[in-house]
Structures are given as structure tokens and as C-alpha cells.
Amino acid sequence: YGPIFQRAVRKFDLSLPFAIVITDSISINSIWIGPHSDAYFVPNEPTAKVLENKGVPRSKIRVTGFPVPILFATPPAKIREVPPADGIWKVLYMVNAEGAEVLETTRGLLSLENLALTITCGRDENLAPRIQNLAAEMGRPIEVLGWVPDMPQLIRRSHLLIGKAGGATVQEA
Figure (cartoon, rainbow, N blue to C red):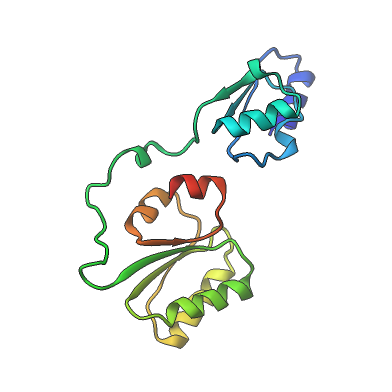
């Protein structure tokens, strides 16, 4: 949003402070460095060094840690048992791949015994029915969700998380 913000500042002749919160670690998208910024909030020192190497003055960089919901700082009321007392492993599969790959992975997961599978499809409305149909064909129960606002709770209730190791996912997990 930096470039859009900067255009609005110029167009309306505004004098507003502008800060960029960088949510990746070390590998930084150049769009975060492009617009003028009064401050950069980064998750760690290695990321601060990357910004410095790209010409950002150290005086504009603040190492603040990774911005995750405060819920992750609070111990859960109930700790998951490992192995689970009921023998059922709760697996959360956060989809970030294309349909065919997702269906192949889902088929493999559904073929495993003693597994309760939850899949999040994000905003891909076409994928959820395909996954549900696959589970029905295999005669296996499944929980398929679209975009979810309660990811911290989903992660906490799971024994295993399968997904892309992006910055937010790694920090939250």
C-alpha cells in the first residue's frame, strides 16, 4: 500500500508520518523499500541488516519482533496430548497450492488411519467442493473451511500443521 499512500499524500498535499511493517524475515520484497518511509518495523536483526544493505538508514529501522496475534503469547487452556488419548491425530492442512496437487495430497492424507483432517482453502471457492467430493468418494470424514479469521485456534487444536513455511505461518506455529 506504500505507493498508493504516497500518491494520496502528494495529491492532497498531506503531511503524515508513514511507516512500513515488514512481515517477512530476511527475504524482503522490494516494494516495501521503494516508497519514502519515516520508519521500518522489522521482525529481527538479520532483516534490519538486509534493509541497511539496501540503503535504508539504521535510524529508520526498528526491530520489534514478528507481529502475531496476542493469543499466541497466552498458553492454551488445555495442552494437546501427544500421542492423543483417543488415538486420533488432528491435522491442519493450509492449502497454498494448485488444485491437482491439493487433491493428491488430500487423497494421501485421507488414506491414513486415525487422522482427523481439517483443510483451509482460503478464498478458493472452487476447491472446497472438490475436496469434499474426494472425501465422500473415499468414505472419509473431513472438515473443509474457506477463509478463516480464527487461524490461531485452528493451529492450537491441531497436532500437525501442513502448509507453506511463510513468515507468518512459521511464527504462529
